[in-house]
Amino acid sequence: MRQRQRIDSPWLLGLTALVTVFTVLPMLLSVGAGLVNNFSAGLASGLTTRWLLEVWALYGSTAWRSVLLALACVACTLAAGVPCAWALAGSRSRAARAFEELITLPVAVPGLATALALILAYGELRGFRQSFAFVLVGHVVVTLPFMVRTVAAAFRRDELASLDEAARSLGAGFVQRFLGVLLPAVAPSIVAGCLMVFTLSMGEFNLTWMLHTPLTRTLPVGLADSYASMRIEIGSAYTLLFFLVILPVLWGMQAVAHRIERKHGSAA
Image 1 (cartoon, helix red, strand yellow):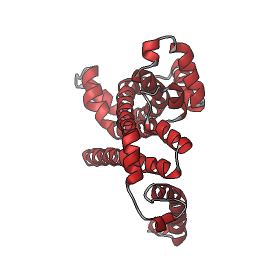
Image 2 (cartoon, rainbow, N blue to C red):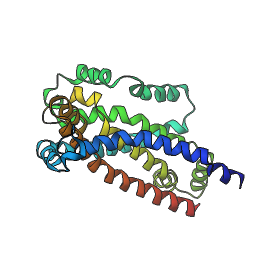
Image 3 (cartoon, rainbow, N blue to C red):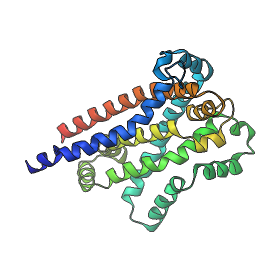
C-alpha cells in the first residue's frame, strides 16, 4: 500500500507530465509545421497535406528502403546475436569476456569512424560498396551489441541452467534443448532486442550518411537533405512521414512483446 501511495504521489505525476511535455512538444511542433501552408504564419495560413504529398513523391522510396533495411538488420542480428549471446553466457573464460567487450566497441566509437573503417576495409569491392548490403553490414555492426547484451543477460539467469540440466537428464539433445527450452524462456528478451535493433537501424544517420549511395539512401539521410536544402515545411512533413512509417511497426512489435511476456508469465 505504501508503494502504491508513492506511485500516485502528485509530485511524481507532475514530474512525469513535465518530462513528457518537454520531450513530446518539440516533435509535435515539428510535425505541425509540415501541416500548415506557411510556417511563419502558423495556423492562420491554413492546414494542408501538400507538403506531405510532395515529400512522399520525392522520398517515398526511402521509407520502404529504411523499413526493409531495419527488418533485414533484425534478421541478421537474430541469426548471429542469439547464438553468440548463448555462447558468451555459458562461458567464464577471459577470452569470452574480452570478446564481449570487443563486440561492444562500435557503440562507443562514433558512427563516422566505424563507417570510415568499413570503407577502408571493403571499399575496393566496388559491387559490394555500392550495394544495399554494404549499408546493412554497417547497421549490423552497430546494432549487434544491443542484441547480444540483452539476450546474454537473459541466458545468464540461474533458473535457465536448471531447466537446461533437467532437459539434458531427460535425454534431450542440444538442438532440442536450445530450440524447445532455452529460446522460449528468453523470448521476451529476444523481442526486446529486436525492438532496440529495429529502432536504432531506422534512426541511424551518421554511419549511413557515410556509407549510402543515391540508390541506397534511407529515411534519416533524406530527412537531413530535406532540412538542409528545402523549406522548413518540407523537412517537417518528412518528419511526419518518418513517424507514420515507424510508429505502426513499433506498436506491432511492442504488442508481440507484451503477448509473449504474458504467455511466458502465465506458463511460469
